[in-house]
Length: 55
Image (cartoon, rainbow, N blue to C red; front, top):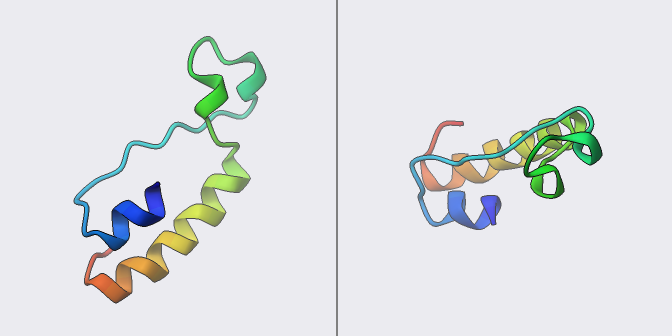
């Protein structure tokens, strides 16, 4: 959804990151581990370049 949102020109994203999502007090199931977050941001930057958004 984040990639589609950036491609559609969104102005912001809310992404939850947690070192140990399985033990998060809330929203662990939707949290990304830091490594996956880093990879996602790299991919979002590339999409952002195409649609004129800086990430």
